[in-house]
Structures are given as C-alpha cells and as structure tokens.
Image (cartoon, rainbow, N blue to C red; front, side):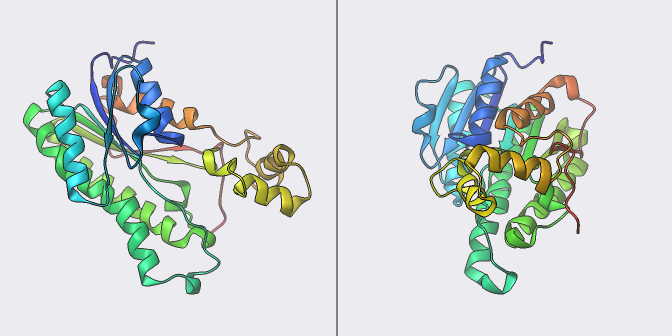
Length: 260
C-alpha cells in the first residue's frame, strides 16, 4: 500500500537509535525526507533522504535548529515525531530527587513542548501537518520502578489531546503511539535489561527475554515488540491516509496489561 508519504518532510527527535532510527528508516523507505535530531546523529550520516542535525531538545535552540534545518532543506514541515526520551530505573519514589524529576520531565515532556512550539507555526501557515508523539503504556498504567518516566508519558498523552482539539480545524492532527516492552538497545547493552533478566532467572539472555515476555508479562503475542513495530504505526499516522485520525492513542504492546 502506498502511504502517500513521497517527498513529505518529517522531523524525528531522538532519531539516531532504537525506535527513532526505525521511524526514520521507515519514513524514508516510504519516500519521505527526514530531518533527524539527536545529541549524536552519527548513525544517520550517509542515510539516503536523511538530514542529520546535532540537536539538544532540552534547549529551545535545539528544537528551533531542527525546524530551521527542515525549512532550509525542503521549505516545509509535514510531520513531527516527538520521540526523544530516557527511562531510568527507580528503586522507589522515595529514592528519587526533585532533580531526577526535573531531568526526566525536561527530556521526555518539555522536549515535546519545545518541538511543537518550534514546528506548529509553520504547519498552521501551510494548513496541514501531523504530530506524532511517542508515549508508553506506563502513561496509563504507571510502573513503580519508572515512576517519573510514567508521569512524563502521561503528560504527553494530555498535551497531544490538547493539540488535537486546538489545531484540528487548522488541518493539523495530533496522535500518540504508546509502546509496551520493546527491544531497544538497552535490552542488549552489556549489563542492560537482558543481562539483568538472565541473572534474575538463571537463564541465558535470549531464554530470559523469552521467559519475561511469555511468563512474567504474559504478552499474548509471546514476544517483545521491535522498534519497527512502532515505526510502522507512526508511518500510518504520518500518512494522509489517516486524515480522519486525531486525538487518538495507538498502543503497540503485544496486548500487554500492567496491573494498577
């Protein structure tokens, strides 16, 4: 199916690894141009139809640099994907500090605010645009071990709906994609999630990840998601084929459920 993304211009934040890189690759495979922002965009260099931009989304200047790069290269911005984020593990709410909360909210939520403030005026001027923000299943069912992360993702859900309500009449759609457990680089990094599960279950890493998906989390699909699973849904929401979809949340979580 042709998604109608040929020569559309998309900004993707946190584009150099994991879900962000999969989104950039999927959009360019559909014929879009991608302006990819990241603190270290080296993984994007040399990719066809991708403009890498070194951008710190904790700063207004970083968001404005991404918008300027897209306009300089292509003269328009059709899609904004708010993907950049961190997810630190917390022993307890009482183990967090105000500084921890400020850092997570600054990177995960205020990066979205900054990017939208930089991009939306241009979308309003051209009378069209699609904003897709990456939240998490934790935004609705908070995980006690990711308490500040969960709150930051709930904020993304709220702001996305607000943007849909305000800007829908101006031709701009705003939607959320909420992944569940997804095998991003931290799962395979030395000492990462995979190694931690292997030590906990007394299994090798692959068997431990399989056990986590099927037994611990009881995912109906029986596996972790992949970054490409998320990217496919993002591409659909970026597409003009989803022109009647706004203010929505799409879960890409293998049917998972977190008990409150």
